[in-house]
Length: 325
Image (cartoon, rainbow, N blue to C red; front, side, top):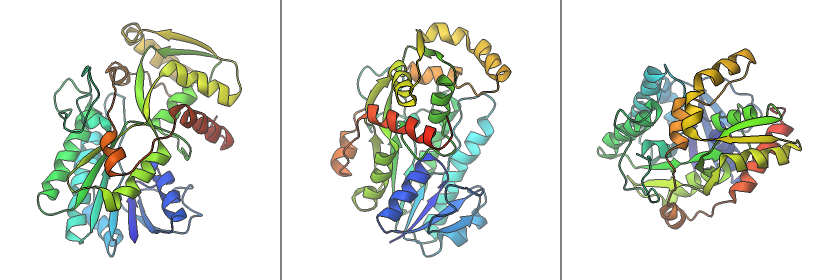
């Protein structure tokens, strides 16, 4: 089976490509820029831009399945136009070329942020509403609109499924990802200031396997939430310090209090040359008090989730072994 992966140089993409090759799939990748993580792998590399339809066509020719991972992720202000372009128009372009090229199936890896996740008071399920109101961060709105764009082509006959992972942790984080950057930042100094909040997390290796299982088991037009469970930020930092083998002083601060400190934290980050992920959009996410019911993916895609604590430790050890920490 011939598989094309867009956004293959990202966290999920790198893990997925390695997993596909281990399972003896014929793999091609579409990348916007060169990636050292893919250079030595036995695959075909196509260069293209999901905002340029003509650049996609050579990569899509003679493929059986397209996995669309390419996306722009940001919790910073001022990125609204790029979020809309990549996460909405990019999805629309990929779906159009997939349909025109006779692709047998498209797997779109979206995000839990496509949903309205704010304080539901119960676990989120696939039939819940999208993040379409102005109260939602621009990233969340762009992911919801991207799924809507894809459904235009599902209605035209495209066989596509949508996967909605929560926060992704684990190895293969070469760039590193937004979550990886956050962990690195919090472990950069022996003192960590963290928000009193939790989120839902999933191991990148489980996301990769969910993608592969959806080739045969995913039902057209269906969403599948991917989550291995919930963990608070303090526990993540504590596990990270354990894996890094360093002593760590951790101070937890209420989200409402930390929100007032965002401008100061941002200036501190610039002064000491590290990227702070403490933004108002990031704190909004932690304030959703999110829990997720991932039983549909467990049942339909035959997925068993790894323990999240193990995922954190494996992530830190991978970052450390590859010179990122």
